[in-house]
Length: 338
Image (cartoon, rainbow, N blue to C red):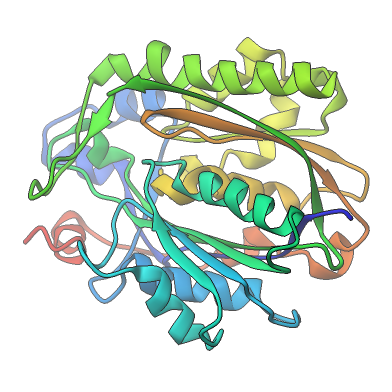
Protein backbone atom coordinates (compact mmCIF):
# COMPACT_ATOMS: atom_id res chain seq x y z
CA UNK A 1 0.00 0.00 0.00
CA UNK A 2 1.46 3.31 -1.10
CA UNK A 3 0.59 6.12 1.30
CA UNK A 4 1.01 9.76 0.50
CA UNK A 5 -0.61 13.08 -0.24
CA UNK A 6 -3.89 12.52 -2.09
CA UNK A 7 -4.97 16.16 -2.11
CA UNK A 8 -3.45 19.48 -1.19
CA UNK A 9 -4.44 23.11 -0.92
CA UNK A 10 -2.99 26.46 0.03
CA UNK A 11 -4.23 29.88 0.98
CA UNK A 12 -2.21 33.09 0.85
CA UNK A 13 -3.86 36.42 1.73
CA UNK A 14 -3.91 38.92 -1.11
CA UNK A 15 -2.43 41.74 0.96
CA UNK A 16 1.30 42.49 0.77
CA UNK A 17 3.62 44.94 2.44
CA UNK A 18 6.99 45.84 0.97
CA UNK A 19 10.06 45.35 3.14
CA UNK A 20 11.17 48.82 2.08
CA UNK A 21 8.03 50.34 3.64
CA UNK A 22 8.78 48.72 7.00
CA UNK A 23 12.42 49.77 6.85
CA UNK A 24 11.48 53.35 6.00
CA UNK A 25 9.43 53.68 9.20
CA UNK A 26 12.44 52.72 11.33
CA UNK A 27 15.03 54.68 9.33
CA UNK A 28 16.76 51.52 8.09
CA UNK A 29 18.48 50.94 4.77
CA UNK A 30 15.96 48.73 2.94
CA UNK A 31 18.49 47.55 0.35
CA UNK A 32 20.73 46.14 3.07
CA UNK A 33 17.80 44.34 4.72
CA UNK A 34 16.48 42.94 1.44
CA UNK A 35 19.94 41.72 0.48
CA UNK A 36 20.56 40.14 3.89
CA UNK A 37 17.17 38.42 4.19
CA UNK A 38 16.56 37.93 0.45
CA UNK A 39 13.03 39.25 0.87
CA UNK A 40 11.25 42.07 -0.95
CA UNK A 41 7.70 41.75 0.43
CA UNK A 42 5.49 39.52 2.55
CA UNK A 43 1.87 38.36 2.71
CA UNK A 44 -0.33 39.86 5.42
CA UNK A 45 -3.65 38.48 6.66
CA UNK A 46 -6.37 41.10 7.04
CA UNK A 47 -7.98 42.10 10.34
CA UNK A 48 -10.82 39.61 9.71
CA UNK A 49 -8.49 36.66 9.02
CA UNK A 50 -6.67 34.35 11.40
CA UNK A 51 -5.01 30.94 11.33
CA UNK A 52 -8.41 29.20 11.43
CA UNK A 53 -10.05 31.08 8.56
CA UNK A 54 -6.95 30.55 6.41
CA UNK A 55 -6.89 26.85 7.34
CA UNK A 56 -10.50 26.54 6.19
CA UNK A 57 -9.68 28.04 2.79
CA UNK A 58 -6.69 25.74 2.27
CA UNK A 59 -8.63 22.68 3.46
CA UNK A 60 -11.52 23.29 1.09
CA UNK A 61 -9.06 23.34 -1.78
CA UNK A 62 -7.32 20.17 -0.56
CA UNK A 63 -10.58 18.26 -0.29
CA UNK A 64 -11.85 19.07 -3.78
CA UNK A 65 -12.76 15.97 -5.78
CA UNK A 66 -11.90 13.70 -2.86
CA UNK A 67 -14.29 11.23 -1.27
CA UNK A 68 -14.05 12.44 2.30
CA UNK A 69 -13.44 9.81 4.98
CA UNK A 70 -11.44 11.78 7.52
CA UNK A 71 -10.29 9.66 10.45
CA UNK A 72 -7.94 12.28 11.88
CA UNK A 73 -7.65 16.05 11.67
CA UNK A 74 -4.49 17.70 12.95
CA UNK A 75 -4.03 21.47 13.11
CA UNK A 76 -0.47 22.79 13.43
CA UNK A 77 -0.05 26.45 14.34
CA UNK A 78 1.84 28.98 16.44
CA UNK A 79 -1.05 31.45 16.35
CA UNK A 80 -4.22 29.60 17.42
CA UNK A 81 -7.40 31.66 17.72
CA UNK A 82 -7.88 30.42 21.29
CA UNK A 83 -5.36 29.73 24.05
CA UNK A 84 -7.69 27.03 25.39
CA UNK A 85 -10.12 25.53 22.82
CA UNK A 86 -8.96 23.40 19.91
CA UNK A 87 -8.97 24.87 16.43
CA UNK A 88 -9.00 21.36 14.92
CA UNK A 89 -12.55 20.63 16.04
CA UNK A 90 -13.80 24.01 14.85
CA UNK A 91 -12.22 23.34 11.48
CA UNK A 92 -13.79 19.89 11.37
CA UNK A 93 -17.21 21.40 12.05
CA UNK A 94 -16.71 24.03 9.35
CA UNK A 95 -15.72 21.35 6.84
CA UNK A 96 -18.53 18.97 7.80
CA UNK A 97 -16.34 15.94 8.45
CA UNK A 98 -18.80 14.46 10.99
CA UNK A 99 -17.85 13.43 14.52
CA UNK A 100 -15.96 10.15 14.28
CA UNK A 101 -12.45 11.48 13.88
CA UNK A 102 -9.40 12.05 16.04
CA UNK A 103 -8.65 15.76 16.44
CA UNK A 104 -5.91 17.71 18.09
CA UNK A 105 -3.84 20.85 17.68
CA UNK A 106 -0.08 20.46 17.46
CA UNK A 107 2.71 22.77 18.54
CA UNK A 108 6.41 22.67 17.70
CA UNK A 109 7.10 26.12 16.33
CA UNK A 110 7.43 25.98 12.55
CA UNK A 111 7.41 22.18 12.25
CA UNK A 112 4.10 21.56 13.99
CA UNK A 113 2.62 20.55 10.63
CA UNK A 114 5.25 17.98 9.68
CA UNK A 115 5.15 16.37 13.11
CA UNK A 116 1.41 15.91 12.61
CA UNK A 117 2.11 14.55 9.13
CA UNK A 118 4.25 11.77 10.59
CA UNK A 119 1.57 10.96 13.18
CA UNK A 120 -1.06 10.73 10.44
CA UNK A 121 1.21 8.53 8.33
CA UNK A 122 1.60 6.08 11.22
CA UNK A 123 -2.16 5.88 11.81
CA UNK A 124 -2.83 5.13 8.14
CA UNK A 125 0.00 2.60 7.89
CA UNK A 126 -1.38 0.72 10.88
CA UNK A 127 -4.85 0.64 9.28
CA UNK A 128 -6.37 2.55 12.17
CA UNK A 129 -7.76 5.17 9.77
CA UNK A 130 -8.06 5.53 6.01
CA UNK A 131 -7.58 9.25 5.60
CA UNK A 132 -6.21 12.22 7.53
CA UNK A 133 -6.25 15.98 7.06
CA UNK A 134 -3.15 17.83 8.22
CA UNK A 135 -3.21 21.62 8.24
CA UNK A 136 -0.42 24.11 8.93
CA UNK A 137 -1.56 27.69 9.30
CA UNK A 138 -0.22 30.89 10.83
CA UNK A 139 -0.80 34.60 11.02
CA UNK A 140 2.76 35.25 12.13
CA UNK A 141 3.78 38.46 13.81
CA UNK A 142 6.85 40.04 15.31
CA UNK A 143 7.41 42.90 17.71
CA UNK A 144 7.56 46.25 15.89
CA UNK A 145 11.19 47.17 15.13
CA UNK A 146 12.30 43.56 15.67
CA UNK A 147 14.05 41.56 12.93
CA UNK A 148 11.02 39.24 12.79
CA UNK A 149 8.83 42.11 11.62
CA UNK A 150 10.49 41.96 8.20
CA UNK A 151 9.89 38.25 7.68
CA UNK A 152 6.80 37.07 9.62
CA UNK A 153 4.03 36.43 7.08
CA UNK A 154 0.64 34.75 6.77
CA UNK A 155 -0.62 31.65 5.02
CA UNK A 156 -1.92 28.11 5.25
CA UNK A 157 -1.31 24.71 3.64
CA UNK A 158 -3.58 21.67 3.95
CA UNK A 159 -2.66 18.09 3.03
CA UNK A 160 -4.95 15.07 2.73
CA UNK A 161 -3.12 11.81 3.47
CA UNK A 162 -4.29 8.41 2.30
CA UNK A 163 -3.61 5.55 -0.09
CA UNK A 164 -6.18 6.24 -2.81
CA UNK A 165 -4.59 7.88 -5.87
CA UNK A 166 -1.74 9.66 -4.07
CA UNK A 167 -0.19 12.62 -5.86
CA UNK A 168 3.02 12.17 -3.89
CA UNK A 169 4.06 9.06 -2.01
CA UNK A 170 6.10 9.26 1.19
CA UNK A 171 9.10 6.97 0.70
CA UNK A 172 10.82 7.62 4.02
CA UNK A 173 11.22 10.14 6.82
CA UNK A 174 13.74 10.98 9.51
CA UNK A 175 13.82 13.40 12.46
CA UNK A 176 16.49 15.19 14.47
CA UNK A 177 15.61 16.91 17.77
CA UNK A 178 17.30 18.61 20.70
CA UNK A 179 16.67 21.11 23.47
CA UNK A 180 17.86 24.26 21.66
CA UNK A 181 15.79 27.28 22.78
CA UNK A 182 16.47 29.63 19.89
CA UNK A 183 12.90 31.05 19.74
CA UNK A 184 10.17 31.17 22.38
CA UNK A 185 7.09 32.94 23.71
CA UNK A 186 5.85 32.56 27.27
CA UNK A 187 2.17 32.39 28.19
CA UNK A 188 0.66 35.86 28.28
CA UNK A 189 3.49 37.44 26.31
CA UNK A 190 2.31 38.86 23.01
CA UNK A 191 5.45 38.74 20.89
CA UNK A 192 8.01 35.95 20.50
CA UNK A 193 11.66 36.31 21.50
CA UNK A 194 14.60 34.87 19.64
CA UNK A 195 18.31 34.28 20.05
CA UNK A 196 19.38 36.43 17.12
CA UNK A 197 22.35 34.86 15.34
CA UNK A 198 22.00 31.86 17.65
CA UNK A 199 19.01 30.81 15.51
CA UNK A 200 21.39 29.92 12.66
CA UNK A 201 24.29 27.49 13.10
CA UNK A 202 23.34 25.67 16.34
CA UNK A 203 19.65 25.70 15.51
CA UNK A 204 18.37 25.78 11.92
CA UNK A 205 21.51 24.45 10.22
CA UNK A 206 22.44 21.81 12.79
CA UNK A 207 18.97 20.27 12.90
CA UNK A 208 18.28 20.20 9.16
CA UNK A 209 21.73 18.74 8.58
CA UNK A 210 20.94 16.06 11.15
CA UNK A 211 17.56 15.07 9.72
CA UNK A 212 18.59 15.17 6.05
CA UNK A 213 21.87 13.32 6.50
CA UNK A 214 20.02 10.65 8.49
CA UNK A 215 17.40 10.37 5.73
CA UNK A 216 20.02 10.05 3.00
CA UNK A 217 21.75 7.29 4.96
CA UNK A 218 18.44 5.54 5.63
CA UNK A 219 17.41 5.58 1.96
CA UNK A 220 20.90 5.16 0.48
CA UNK A 221 20.20 8.20 -1.71
CA UNK A 222 22.42 11.14 -2.62
CA UNK A 223 21.43 14.77 -3.28
CA UNK A 224 21.93 14.27 -7.02
CA UNK A 225 19.14 11.66 -7.05
CA UNK A 226 16.54 14.27 -6.10
CA UNK A 227 14.92 16.45 -8.75
CA UNK A 228 13.84 19.07 -6.22
CA UNK A 229 14.71 20.06 -2.67
CA UNK A 230 12.58 22.13 -0.29
CA UNK A 231 13.70 23.53 3.06
CA UNK A 232 11.94 25.55 5.73
CA UNK A 233 12.26 29.24 4.91
CA UNK A 234 12.67 31.58 7.91
CA UNK A 235 14.15 33.99 5.36
CA UNK A 236 15.48 33.78 1.82
CA UNK A 237 19.11 33.21 2.80
CA UNK A 238 19.00 30.17 5.10
CA UNK A 239 17.49 27.62 2.65
CA UNK A 240 20.05 28.59 0.01
CA UNK A 241 22.89 28.10 2.49
CA UNK A 242 21.68 24.75 3.83
CA UNK A 243 21.06 23.42 0.32
CA UNK A 244 24.63 24.22 -0.66
CA UNK A 245 25.98 22.75 2.57
CA UNK A 246 24.15 19.47 1.92
CA UNK A 247 25.20 19.23 -1.73
CA UNK A 248 22.05 20.39 -3.51
CA UNK A 249 22.37 22.85 -6.38
CA UNK A 250 20.52 26.10 -7.07
CA UNK A 251 18.27 24.55 -9.72
CA UNK A 252 16.96 21.96 -7.24
CA UNK A 253 15.68 24.58 -4.78
CA UNK A 254 14.79 27.42 -7.15
CA UNK A 255 11.06 26.66 -7.46
CA UNK A 256 10.55 26.44 -3.70
CA UNK A 257 11.92 29.86 -2.74
CA UNK A 258 8.60 31.69 -2.48
CA UNK A 259 9.65 33.26 0.83
CA UNK A 260 11.13 36.21 -1.07
CA UNK A 261 7.64 37.53 -1.88
CA UNK A 262 5.46 35.80 0.75
CA UNK A 263 7.53 35.93 3.92
CA UNK A 264 7.79 33.23 6.59
CA UNK A 265 4.33 31.88 7.38
CA UNK A 266 5.83 29.82 10.24
CA UNK A 267 4.20 26.34 10.25
CA UNK A 268 3.10 26.77 6.63
CA UNK A 269 6.40 28.16 5.33
CA UNK A 270 8.23 24.99 4.30
CA UNK A 271 5.03 23.36 3.07
CA UNK A 272 4.35 26.49 0.99
CA UNK A 273 7.64 25.77 -0.76
CA UNK A 274 6.53 22.20 -1.38
CA UNK A 275 3.22 23.33 -2.88
CA UNK A 276 5.09 25.79 -5.10
CA UNK A 277 7.43 23.02 -6.26
CA UNK A 278 4.59 20.62 -7.11
CA UNK A 279 3.44 23.06 -9.79
CA UNK A 280 6.55 22.12 -11.77
CA UNK A 281 7.08 18.49 -10.71
CA UNK A 282 6.53 15.62 -13.14
CA UNK A 283 5.57 11.97 -12.53
CA UNK A 284 8.57 10.06 -11.25
CA UNK A 285 10.33 13.10 -9.79
CA UNK A 286 11.78 12.73 -6.32
CA UNK A 287 11.57 15.60 -3.82
CA UNK A 288 13.51 16.10 -0.61
CA UNK A 289 11.56 18.13 1.93
CA UNK A 290 12.92 19.24 5.30
CA UNK A 291 11.08 21.26 7.92
CA UNK A 292 12.51 23.09 10.91
CA UNK A 293 10.95 24.09 14.20
CA UNK A 294 12.59 26.14 16.91
CA UNK A 295 13.11 24.49 20.23
CA UNK A 296 14.36 22.58 18.17
CA UNK A 297 13.84 19.91 15.54
CA UNK A 298 13.68 19.01 11.87
CA UNK A 299 11.70 16.39 9.94
CA UNK A 300 13.04 15.29 6.55
CA UNK A 301 11.08 13.38 3.90
CA UNK A 302 11.81 11.62 0.64
CA UNK A 303 8.78 12.11 -1.62
CA UNK A 304 8.00 10.58 -5.02
CA UNK A 305 5.63 12.25 -7.48
CA UNK A 306 3.06 10.00 -9.20
CA UNK A 307 0.96 10.22 -12.38
CA UNK A 308 -1.97 11.66 -10.39
CA UNK A 309 -0.17 15.02 -10.19
CA UNK A 310 -1.33 15.70 -13.75
CA UNK A 311 -5.01 15.97 -12.83
CA UNK A 312 -4.65 17.22 -9.26
CA UNK A 313 -1.96 19.87 -9.72
CA UNK A 314 -2.45 23.35 -8.23
CA UNK A 315 -1.08 26.34 -10.12
CA UNK A 316 0.43 28.03 -7.09
CA UNK A 317 1.93 30.89 -9.10
CA UNK A 318 -1.57 31.90 -10.23
CA UNK A 319 -2.89 31.52 -6.68
CA UNK A 320 -0.49 34.15 -5.34
CA UNK A 321 -0.52 36.49 -8.33
CA UNK A 322 -3.46 38.61 -7.15
CA UNK A 323 -2.15 41.06 -4.57
CA UNK A 324 -2.83 44.47 -3.06
CA UNK A 325 -0.11 46.49 -1.37
CA UNK A 326 -0.76 48.11 2.00
CA UNK A 327 1.12 50.75 3.96
CA UNK A 328 2.63 50.35 7.42
CA UNK A 329 -0.29 51.82 9.43
CA UNK A 330 -2.68 49.44 7.64
CA UNK A 331 -0.31 46.57 8.39
CA UNK A 332 -0.41 47.44 12.11
CA UNK A 333 -4.20 47.53 11.96
CA UNK A 334 -4.46 44.16 10.20
CA UNK A 335 -2.12 42.58 12.75
CA UNK A 336 -4.14 44.12 15.64
CA UNK A 337 -1.05 45.94 16.87
CA UNK A 338 -3.00 49.21 16.90
